[in-house]
Image (cartoon, rainbow, N blue to C red; front, top):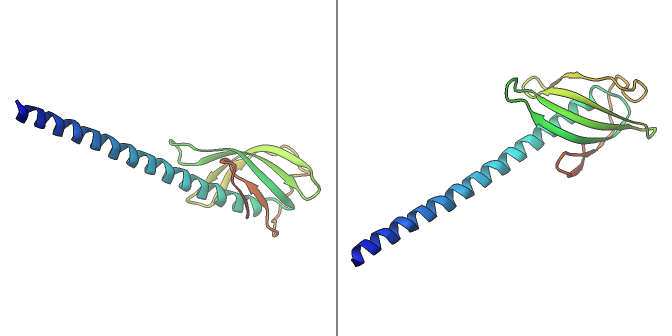
Length: 131
């Protein structure tokens, strides 16, 4: 009888250990995905700086990967040096390091050109950084 109890206890113990290990692995994998997404988000803002002039601030409202095409989609609020803002979307190709397309909502704010100065960026996770 004590041998049966020992075997069951060992089996339950192993199941618990496997469950905890699996949970830790899944959490680490999710954290890595979030870090990778943030890196691509930052990369896309750098490309945005090379597309539009006079950017003062970019707030990324939403940033997601399209699993079918492999591209990323972003919804942003961009503010220029005059304090005027525009809300628009764009697609980004990580491998090509280029914008796939974007909506022109306000040509006064979305001026074609390059922004040389550092830009305040508020990422989709709320983190702020100068890029």
